[in-house]
Figure 1: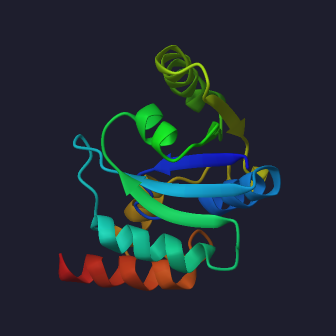
Figure 2: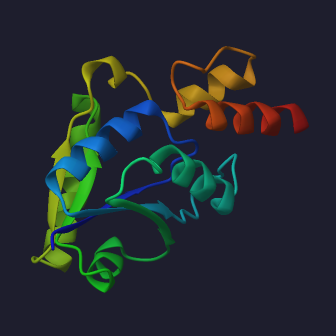
Figure 3: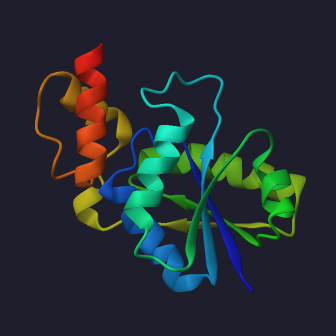
Length: 160
């Protein structure tokens, strides 16, 4: 069984992320979307809220599950018996960082391959930071995230 890990902060999950998940599910027998606990970032949503958003957004994909992890990604991948790490590339600006991370992960564990997937071109400009910024200023994010995600983000921003 070919298992892939798709890690990210997913704060929030966007249609671009979902496009990459769908593409990965066509290639791998199982895809584990995993929320990374990143001590550098200050997420808007809690880990549990992000996992709930993702579970709701991917429920139609039978091969996709949701988890979270902390620490080295390759160690987590090895624990889950994954052979691949999936990363989305939107633009050339993503490539340098992702390439560097892929090489480091290969150095740490050569048995795990990084697979770069490009989302549909209509999502190349889209990222979670932009979605949060638009929502913060009262903009419509319905074209960028699933309805349940939109409701949660708007609710969280009203509290602030």
